[in-house]
Image (cartoon, rainbow, N blue to C red; front, side, top):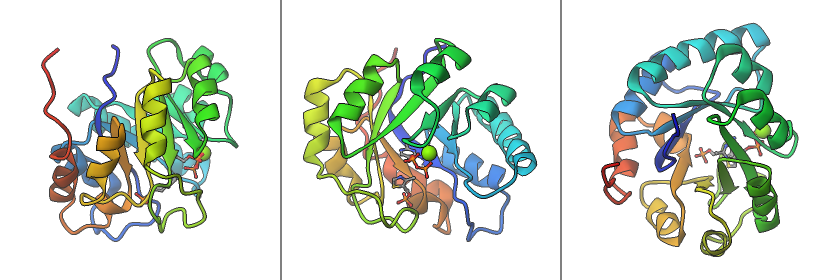
Length: 212
Ligand SMILES: Cc1ncc(COP(=O)(O)OP(=O)(O)O)c(N)n1
Ligand SMILES: Cc1ncsc1CCOP(=O)(O)O
Ligand SMILES: [Mg+2]
């Protein structure tokens, strides 16, 4: 199945302010309209990551929402996830494409650099991610491109564009207007008391889907 990469992209929090298990939090984000989920866990051991990723994969499969694993190509391959997200310290997108196959979602971090996105496109990536567009408590030291980078990328690339970093339901609209196909969000969804409602506030920013 080819996945349409458009809409809200929910990324799991590493520290939770929620009493509910991660799988319930993801269920709520999907109820609020999340179209893609990333399992991002930089701190846990392999066993815990594997167990959490499997449980999220079950939730995502039943909702028909793809699950991407951050950084860990081995884990993505081992559990049969829908794809992987790769940054500058992670495996090469070509290796990921070879390992996971033609339908897999291979996301690549491009920070504030159009040249990285052009390389990613040539390497068979599925989307290019730019950011952090706004201050983020998750990545306080991230580079900060201007939203105009998305407009430039839109002109130069065919790949879907993901915007990330400090995105709220207020500032997200300007990133979509600049060319973002997806908004990737942690805090604005998962640090809120009502996760589904918080997700819905982003979902409504996107133009309505045209039926396939
Ligand atoms: C959609 C999306 N965009 C960017 C990132 C950041 O990736 P990376 O630079 O590898 O940093 P870590 O997330 O691994 O700390 C992302 N995860 N997802
Ligand atoms: C992983 C990552 N890469 C750039 S900013 C960021 C964190 C996004 O989290 P938040 O939506 O809470 O700012
Ligand atoms: Mg990474």
